[in-house]
Image (cartoon, rainbow, N blue to C red; front, side, top):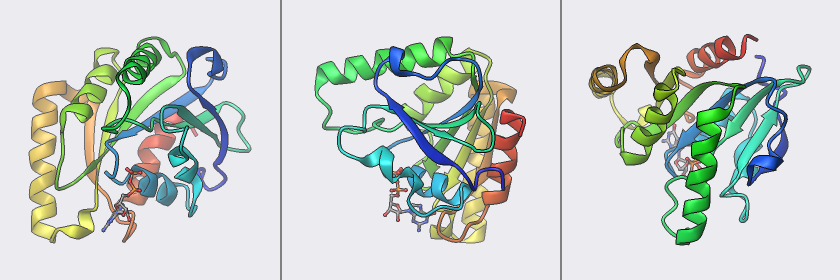
Length: 199
Ligand code: GDP
């Protein structure tokens, strides 16, 4: 597992704090409580990796995890999206930062959108998918908490999301079932991300 040695590297809350734009990055987005931290932890086989992203004061930052022994491959956690209580001016700053990151970041190779299988494709999810696809970047939707549904309902939910995403965003998007709880879909997610990072 190329992600098992992932470790916190830095958090950036404005563009000058970003690491040099020379490597390979995959960004993770998800509404708060979707299960993004659990997904990151499962993919990286670690219990508390993504906890740092939830530290108060870090919820409006891009959190970078590097992947030793590489020095130029990163997972980027985009926290703070979907938080209701953020003050207006901070929201504007955050929007501008994320927007600029998506528009200009050359290292960004793909977007993972983590969605609760029972509540997919909300406004924020669509905004993130739109950012990625409008730049020609691939996006992969992880439908997590699949363990909350039976097999049939999981399949139906995935087909519905896949159909809607294809119609709206075309062939740059893909979808899978996932559970941080049962570890369903973890290998599949790793494969997609490792491919984007050329690991
Ligand atoms: P985040 O805010 O998107 O980072 O979400 P978390 O990973 O912290 O998860 C939010 C809540 O959903 C927590 O109570 C988790 O235990 C629960 N959760 C996350 N992933 C799963 C999953 O795959 N299955 C189930 N049943 N619960 C999950």
